[in-house]
Every structure is written in structure tokens, then in C-alpha cells.
Length: 242
Image 1 (cartoon, one colour):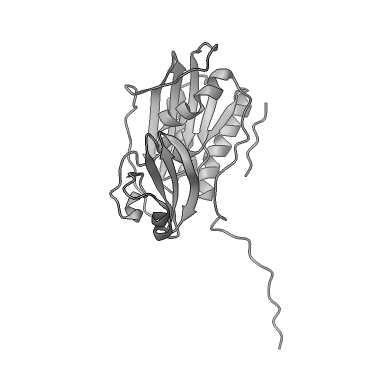
Image 2 (cartoon, one colour):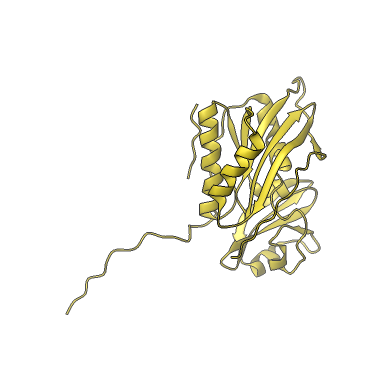
């Protein structure tokens, strides 16, 4: 099975596994739940995240998790995180955040997810990373650099607008008054940073739980860049005339 991939400042913070947290999953009528272990990955933000997550008996539970905040070492840190959370175990599926996010970091997560799924013969599923930060009626905001933000608006946890990228003033003009803002990018819209600051791998897997439990075929892992990468190919050399 081959999974297709359609293509500041930094510090370190380790977060403990959220093993006590569970998310309820409501199965479709007529389908029994299975005990499925999922490798979850996200590199859409400075938080390089890997977790082993169990979907069983209508819940999503984190068994092991490693989150390191460092925007400059996605490849190195993700490889370490995967090795640590798997500890020799065999996941039944991979769920990965598809962004939006910067080109380089986002590609690390998607390529890693596809490679692991191919090597182990398991399916891989993509989820919008902003969806893994939303519960209730909120606007999720992430720093997109270049004085812009990535954002999406949710009602009842369901995305109703976005994901999009834009300048803070333009985004504010589109939002309903008084809507709560969450995410590390909220201060760029004049609000305090509110948890969750980065995608939750527990919520990421919950968004894909129906596909995981159904044993659905792999998704094409399409990154949500929303704009052209910072690096561009050089143009043709200009001729100099005397």
C-alpha cells in the first residue's frame, strides 16, 4: 500500500502525556468499535508532536506523547518522538495534521506519516491541524509569519469558515464580535493566547476516528500551505548589454 503525498525564535518545552484525558467517539449505527492503536503526528506549528493513541469503546485516549516546541528542528525531533512513543510497538493506522503551516515543517510530518504507513502496510489519514484545536464556538488562530495568520471559525466544534490566511486587520473584519479566540496566534489579533496553543493529538485522532474504526483506505496526504513557499526558484539571468 503506497500513501500519496501531494505536495523566530525557538526553545524547548516537554509536555507530559495526557493519558487521563479521553474524547468520546460516537460510532455509526450498526458498527461495533474496535481496539485500534494510532500513531498521531503534527508538525504544522513550532510544536513537533508525536503520540500513540488508542481508539476503543467509544473513546480516544493518549497512551504516550512527546511534544517539543522548536521551529527549527522538525525532522530531527519528529524522528525522536516517533521512536519514543512507539517503543517498538505496532500501530494500526497513522493520523497526521495537514496544516495549514510552513512548507518545510509541514512536509516533514506528511512525508514521515506516508513513509511509516507504506513500510508497515497500514492506512494513513489527514486532518486539518486547526480542527485539532477547536471545541465549541471559537476561532482558531495560528501565526503564519509574514505578518499574517492562519485561521478557521467553528460552531459546535464544526468548521464553518476557513482554513484561510490573511492579515490580522482583514481577519478581524470578517469575524463576529465577541467570538473567543484560541491558539498561539491569538495575540496577533489583539487577544491573549488561549489554550490550546498548538494542535492536540487527541483531538486530531478524534477527528479521524470514524475512518480509523471503519478501516477506510488511506487518504491522499495533501498539505494545506494556503500560499506559496518562502523559497522560490531564481529567475532567468538578465543579459547585460554594453
